[in-house]
Image 1 (cartoon, rainbow, N blue to C red):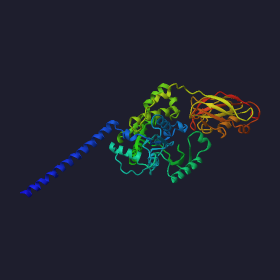
Image 2: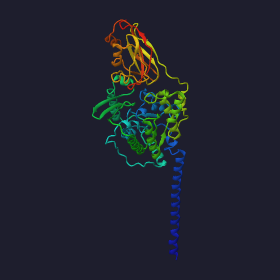
Image 3: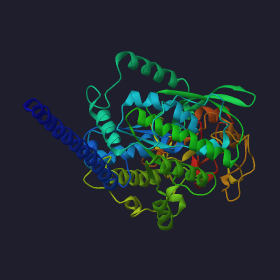
Image 4: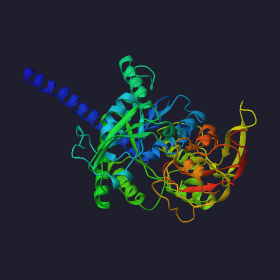
Length: 498
């Protein structure tokens, strides 16, 4: 009897402990569900949390020419401007890396991404690519390994990945690579210097064709970090539907790769509208919605900005953002990153404040002298950052209608586009040499909108030099692309033999 009572009594504690374990498990499960729901609501379905994002960290920007900042000096591209905004408004140690390259299609983005993430160990990666898919064929070997990351993980998992990415790396985020990697980087930078001719450097559009073969070419580029990046371009234009499918597939893969590496992926829309931009943006937005990532769309601000200051204030003629456009884009990106809790800043400047007091650029030129006696050595030109400036010379004033499709080379298109201004110079041997000679080259206007154009007196002498009248004018062009945007009035230079 007593023994039976002992066995029955011993079962009650076990039952109580089982009930307690079940209650604890249910409490933990409900707590996790409550925390997950709180994270989703607080971040508006955006990955990460403000607590995980605070402090110094890296932000990697991957993409094409819109990330690179085509035509602009490095400090004017949106990643550099974003870094400046972070430093000024609460994250002074954050480094933003610009891995953008002109003409980079989405399959190259996903191929480069894992290596870039492991090199820079960023907190978040901003992805913008897709337009180049419209005039490139995707190669058969485009696929990369993805280890089956869930397309939309729990926010708790994302927050944990964020903490691991932030605090798991040894040392301060953004430190230099190990000595072996640094040596390879230095070698790559040295090789890149050989990839760019002197004219290409001034246009901040460094690229070179290494090999050409039927239907394809191999190109190499120097990125904003000084490294060399290269890939094959297969010629051919896919359909809109095919290119959109590539964008969705490749960028979904890129999102998965970022998550596998413990990095928060963010997708950006192109700020331009129409043409190839609309289907690319639609594909990028579908990826963001399906994967549950932040989608930053600056098109509303750019539309308001164009209504306020005109399209030319925000876009070059080929629809790449100007310096003002990149400034607006960087502020929109900062605003959305702060809203998502991915950066911790004290304030976010209003995007369109960039345009306060903005006036259309006007072309001005002035002669500058050096130790060359009475002869000027340079012509100083002022217009707007990113545009190209070309010094043109002739023996007389006049009117010459020309097209200017590429820097210093008029042989490809002699017929000007509609609306292009005529040159205020007489067409003669000197002007012809100006248009096709290497001595008369395009120089891109710097961040302050100015540049110094050397007057090549030796070349003048070789092309009908000697005494007599000599006139000059400055043409403003879009480097490597054209057309002529503006031309100064012709102004007299002292004779070459003076």
